[in-house]
Length: 481
Ligand code: SER
Ligand code: ZN
Image (cartoon, rainbow, N blue to C red; front, side, top):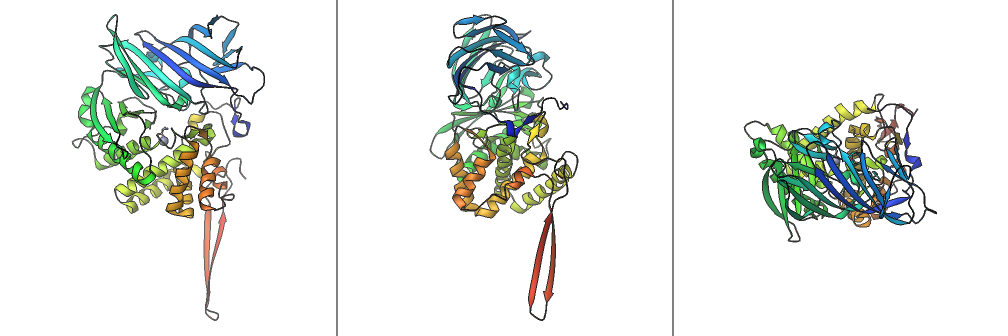
């Protein structure tokens, strides 16, 4: 955990990137001692920027083999690689940068980037793990169309997965094989995923409301093969619920979940290829209790719902984390309420909120659901950003009513599909459909702490008047006296 204040990132300093990447072609060659990553990135200059500024790409632990700018090979000092940044000077507004680097998944213990989990190799890129795979503009407002080609030993890694639809596969020399995946939906690097392993597969099919067939696949290690039934049922229930409740249909031809024994978060919503901590997806009636089943259903739903609230419409920067997490937690809580018992779900959410979030909000780590600055974004995957964030969405829903809320989410998804946006954009849609002024309400986004509401009442028998008064205050929180 980074705690020094040398490198504070502030929301108010947000600036669009000078260049963006429209297309990302990756070739990942897995060998025993290292993995070679060949990336071909298609850059375009942001037309609001004048001149040709230097290009700075994020990259951690990249052993450079070669770098080509268009057709020309670059050598130091034509590029510089220091302090986890690769810098070079473009010579045109549109250019192709090709880098070949070596990384070491078997030595990567950070559980970010590409790393070994048991016998499989898998990835975790949110929030800033992609820079451990290759050089990149590793920020969510850079959205590219990815094609990923993976090569590995067939016996050791018979299953090779990435985002999108499978477009090619075949044999190579030396008992190796390959698979190529193409994801037509532009996405930020944090939603990239790759998996190579000896995994068994549980297949199913879901037919969407418009009649498209989607292949569903859950992958697990052989000893867990009998524990995937409940997750696949949960997935089908989630897909159908999102169509009915939000009009949101799944978009690719295939949806995959991989269970990994070593995973730092509960699960991750990578486009078309969710990766889960085994504990959040695998269960059997012999060894799992009801609470485990409930949790699996909710997490499968949560990650699936991100396909719209997070992936199709994503965050402009990490200060907007609650845009996708608050909304998606709210959506998964509605799903559980609709599927089971709404009162039971609400009571359990409020219990969790009071024990985990109220205490966070009352202590030294209190922060608003939209923090204004951070040193390390990984420290902001909190009960506040997630659970309080969901309560803020719930309040918006309560204020404008169910019908307007649905109109508001339709407007939000339709307007911002394929874009990286802000919490302001979301609330703006809710204002537009309801004509409610949310100016004051938006203080919930920037004010930490749990407000206290005092209620007093009095009755005057003479005039037969009953008076109810409310008073609200919020104790000081760090940096917010
Ligand atoms: N984005 C992931 C999730 O919320 C990280 O935990 O599902
Ligand atoms: Zn989430």
